[in-house]
Amino acid sequence: MSLIKQLWIAIIVIVLLAFGSSFFISAYQTKNYLAEQLQVKNIDNATGMALTLSQMEKDLTTIELMLAAQFDTGYYRRIALKDVAGNIVTEFSLTAQPVNAPDWFISLLNFEIKPGIAQVQDGWQRFGSIELESQTDYSLVALWQITKDLALGFLIIAMGCGITGSILLNRVRRPLNQVVYHAEALGNRQFITSDEPATFELKRLVVAMNRLTGRVRLMLEQERKQLDQLQRQYELDPVTSAFNRAYCASWLEGYFNNSERSEIKSVFLLRVTNLQGINLQLGRSETDNWLRLLVNTVQQYHGVRLVSRLNGSDFFVVSDQVTTTSSMCEQLLGQLNTECLLDSNHTTAPLLLVGLSLDAMSSRQQTLSQLDAMLVEVESAPPLQSKTLQQPQPYDTLADATAWLKAIKQAIDADRIMPKLYPVQRRDGSLLHQEAMLRLNINDEWLSAGQILGWARRYQFTSQLDSAMLNRALGQLSADNSLQLALNISDQTLTTVAVHYQLLTLLQTVPKSVCQRLSLEFDERLVIKHQLLFISFASALKALGVSVGLQKCGYAINDIQDLEKLGIDYLKIDAAIVLRYQTSEAAKLLAGLIKLAHTLSLLVIAEGVVSVEDINGLHQLGFDGLTGPGIA
View (cartoon, rainbow, N blue to C red):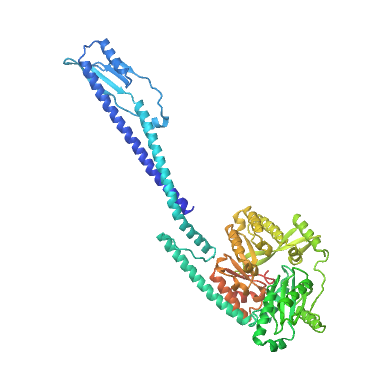
């Protein structure tokens, strides 16, 4: 229960106790006062009537007429004259009449008045006694009216107190909500700062939380600087800030070791022709600036995921297959010829570009050898600038893109979708979760994500696949209470707000206990490009109990602004770094990444673990979990 509700309950209880006690005390005091007045009236009237009768002739008829006349005034319920022996000589009484008041009120506050008794004399002798009881119905009706007026007054005062309390609580609510939001953010590993409220106790609390946030940010900044220095020292080309040859080799090894590829990649080898002559023509400084422009142009091209400098003049480029390899080669070369010209006298840039699809290759050595051979062929046939390797489609039954899209839609509509599970293991050997990889049945054959996503991406159909996978995963989680799953989320899903609402609505249809066993993972590069969208989506997912993680993490982690505000639960480090953990350079980088993540209380998971022998070494580095071909 929220603090505001507790305050409201406390205020209501206090008001009810105060008004209730005042109400009943006032009602009983009024009743006692009226009862006292009625008792005095009974005694006074009985005494007066006895005095009158004592002075009269003791004729019974005359006495009865006098008592009847007195009774008929309507102020009495009973008048009785008794003789000396206590026998009733004459009596007048009124039958019970309905009273205009509720029964519960009558039973609770009914009057019990003793009759007034006085002695009647006959000279010096005692004639008898007279008993008189006044009518109480009028007093009961009057008491009921007073009580109603009192209750109405209390109700009006209570409403006024409620309005005043609401205004005061709203003034308290604003800083209190701010403190609650700050505390929830800290609980979700989002280290934010808040303005200090005027309330003294809340101010002390906010100051303490802001101080904690400041310390965490200072530690993060220090860790980031150290990580950035290590990255620039060991993994990046000092001139262009592209990755170096070692990273390229490691990335290729990780790609071919991974049997469950999310999609097919295209790779290119870009060569600067006559780099020595360019250096003599422009000078070293201008040449370096031109090389940086070249690398930046390639990195900004749609679909490019990696640029690595193999040597002085050769650059290795990895791209998602958003189009055919040949189309991308032509388009990329055309953009480079436009933006990277050395001077206006040339119509093309001094560049050669060759490419192929990695699906046609089987190893790192074969890939680099094939690219080198293609580059030699292009160099020997000027003015040829580019060449691509034509290879068969990975699944050539549906060669037409439109047929692919139709087949994918039919498979989803027929629920021919199945996740293939790969374990993620904790340090103690227990299961953290299982990665659910897409399998789709087309023409009675189960196809992997790598065979499907390239086609789906061309028609922007990946979000529908994400929705179908999530729906299937929720069904499995609901059926098996011990199952924990992690799903990869595509770039189209992350960048489309309408899809966010669709997935959140789907998650709201299942109990929170099911959502708590689900993790959604996003590529690090996507989070960098769409950080605000990610923070909004991740916050909504966390509110439903879903865990959120980043996959393929590594050197770009420093490019994420305010990492502490993302609210993520774990990082999965890219296999391109993990595979080289035995080298001192990669070990330092991994240790820096792990320390940065642990500062934010994040789990760190190594991707691409190949052999059982690597498990102990990676655990010694500080990894909290492992996944890959070597994890059974």
